[in-house]
Image (tube, rainbow, N blue to C red; front, side, top):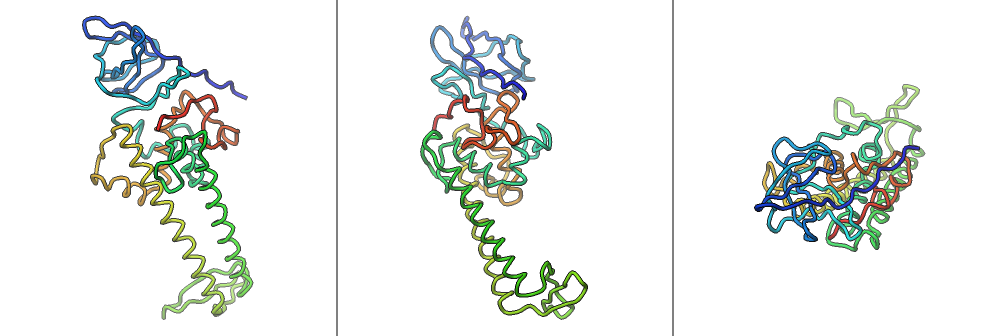
Length: 287
């Protein structure tokens, strides 16, 4: 098993003539705000244009009143960018198609969404909630997801029992519904089949509306906390991104709130399956 990376200590720097000199603790993107300890005081500096490499020294003026929300009492850095997203919404395969975050995002999206909500101290509806250490958000969202999956599976089984098993719904030229059976024969759907199908659709629709609402609120909370301005659609951007590609949106939120290049999470590991989807030693994000 690969050894987990050590958490990054608080960076120290020196201030001369209003400029802070600091050595980058890791590769940092342009615009990233790094919290630096200068003579016992915490100050934020912005990484200059072009970014910096690990070990590279640079100078920058302190940013007044800004915070990454990234340094916890234990003296470790979250490395969460301020002012813009860590990467693009379509960077789902940034760490490979078999990465834990990617697999959850495409196969069990509500679980990853619940983990992001927990990191951000949100409740299961995406509103303000308990701190991650006391939060049950991920369990609740996962529980709802599992119950919906079981109910829909049971409804499909009932449908299969009322007509030929594994039949597919089709419409003829007149717009009438019929069942195409695996052996090539056709059947007229019973009233039970149609009622159960309607209930199945309603359950799926209600869950989709709930999850859409929760993710929109959570994404908006992330943008507010890290002062990320919308790039299109104004304040409706959160809803637009969630509506058109919720799995990509949730994964972008997950990558922003956890630096996987430093604090990676193995697929099928305990870290992948805990409430936050993070290494346990990574400190909580301050609400």
